[in-house]
Length: 176
Image: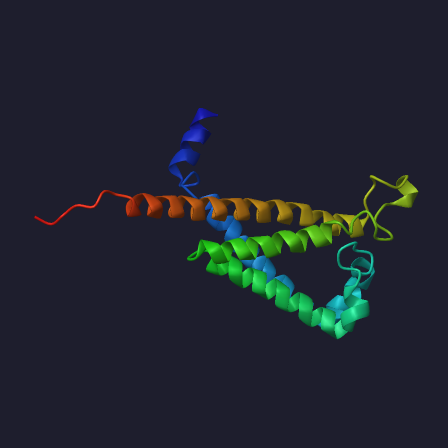
């Protein structure tokens, strides 16, 4: 086992921030792809049973209609993905993207207990999942990744601010 650990240590897998950068890249790709799908009205029609049972998003289709919901969700997901991408260079924008991402996955994960057909009645109901609940369960992982990115970006902004404050409070030195 030590041999495997040593190989992994030399592989670059433990390089500082590799996990952070890989998770950010994965979220950018996910939002780009999911956002594209949301622009397709057919995608929203397929999601109507989920959206209408979401405790945080049930209002979308009655208020915005199918097309409006499509535009709203597609725009939101591309916005969050773009902000996460910009977070590579500007952590404050990354924080906004991570906050949006957190809200997005809270909104979708909270659908799980309420959506019809989420629990396999033939297997006794909860906790026996169907593909509907399994589809929504992935949002738990995406929520956790969003919280991780949010935490990392906040820490980096605070560290940069502290570093800047320390530089600004250095004693004034007169030129000789």
